[in-house]
Image (cartoon, rainbow over the protein chains, first blue to last red):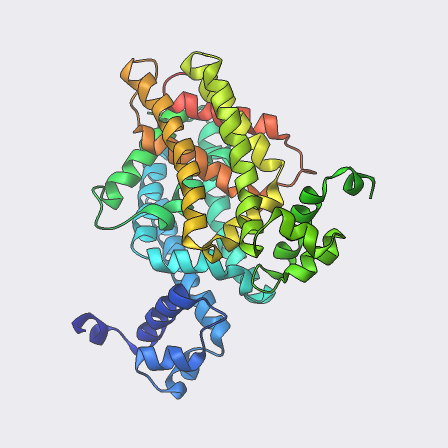
Length: 195
Length: 195
């Protein structure tokens, strides 16, 4: 409970929503149940979120916003392509494994989101994918990376592994997130002839 | 309608179930709606399937059974490791893209399946993953493939791309399944130093 009390009201609400959506699904969960679980008033919830849909979009939106900020920071550092790709892949694995329940709930329930909310998240995710793809494509054009596969395929490979993490990765397991990210980056760079 | 009439009653029932589960979800679909859409009697449905759960497990079970049969056939042919890996990856992409709606419905609704039915499918999927991983691991032990990444990571890479196909692949798009499978296989083999 020490941890719970360190969270803000907004964070407590989101954590309660993740738990309840994971346990019983988005449709079966009422705003009242989220309020009860988070131990806040209904007024407090509606101060932060207009509707139940907002909870679901923010569960994923928070992770995505962090990943986009990290991506911008990594690219601003001006690393050579191989180091940039490695830093991005490690960050994706570390941020996703730090919010496994959020990622799993969102993957299962996202088709319940209204089109306008989903469109916002899709646009952010597209910006991430397109930026990543361009890192690979630019290095292929300059000859730093081999054109073994299209930059599109390399993007599918990285996000394929990352998107599967919620299905099998357990923090108590033998492999630390950083190690897993490094292993994926090493394999991808070898595939690009930059190992 | 010509195609529909070429299907057996069992196939018509499964096709109707895939359509309805995709349109309105597993929970919201009744056996009566499946019967109406498939234009069969309720008796005909219960001749083939004990319950609505059977429809969902068979939607994925059919694809999985085909992939396992193909895997056994490829391995029985005794190809060298790189050729075997290529044939397996191309087959996975071709079979999955030939049943995109089935794969998408199953991914979304599988958590609705009773534990015993899910356990059967999981065991079959595990046999596929373990066989694939061992193809990679054996070639790494013999030195044919480099140990850039664990055989486990290579398995995650391949299934990560394959499992994402229902989310973006469209048969009308510019890339044929075989070409996509070849591209993935080429990249994976390059990552394993066997390009």
